[in-house]
Figure 1 (spheres, protein in one colour):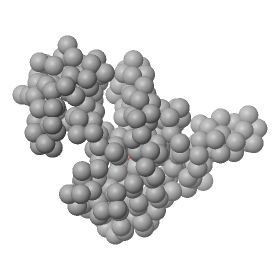
Figure 2: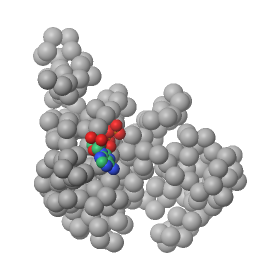
Figure 3: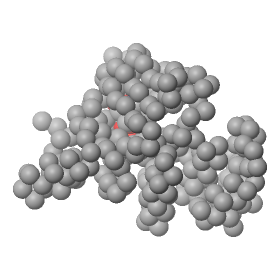
Figure 4: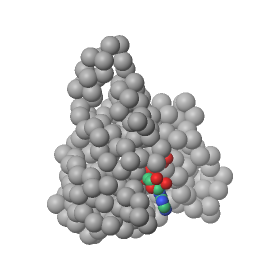
Length: 238
Ligand SMILES: Nc1ncnc2c1ncn2[C@@H]1O[C@H](COP(=O)(O)OP(=O)(O)OP(=O)(O)O)[C@@H](O)[C@H]1O
């Protein structure tokens, strides 16, 4: 579904992403973990085409990531959800439906608004939404065209405990419906329950790429250590 080969992104002389390669199979849920500044957002922005890569190859569904064909496969939910001040929640969904040619969008929009407990906010303006509500609108807009591949950049930041719990539930639902998901986060417990695999990024390089089960086994071998301990150990500065 997604193949990244020898991706490099430089900011000036700094390699923020330093020659990384990885692959996501269809239906896989993968956590992209790393401390602040590891290069998670830069990697994601290069994949979705918001940043120009310095070099490397990225294909989505077998198509170059910048092609229209590739763009039909995915949605991206940025770290800071952007909503239009003067559009209502429902108008956001209408806008996306028209832009993507979503048929019978009203029924799908209703289902999404109910799922995200936004149905009573359908007529609220973007400027009057809280951070958590904006995030939910952003996710609803991303899901409306029914993409096969979803990119979430730090989805839990700024959410209250209830919204975090709901977002985890939504990941589970998306996973069960067969979506391929790449979630960037520095909070291991936010993806531990749903990720098939974790990739650990540090200083722009992938320093770990394994299933949760294998990583847990590795952690347990290091006397009583948790997955979080292993992550901290792997990403610590030497
Ligand atoms: N626009 C930019 N110009 C110059 N350097 C940048 C820019 N954006 C990011 N960087 C640098 O690139 C590196 C990777 O940053 P990036 O935002 O991708 O990391 P991240 O893993 O997403 O971090 P965080 O968890 O803090 O969001 C950092 O050293 C950062 O300072």
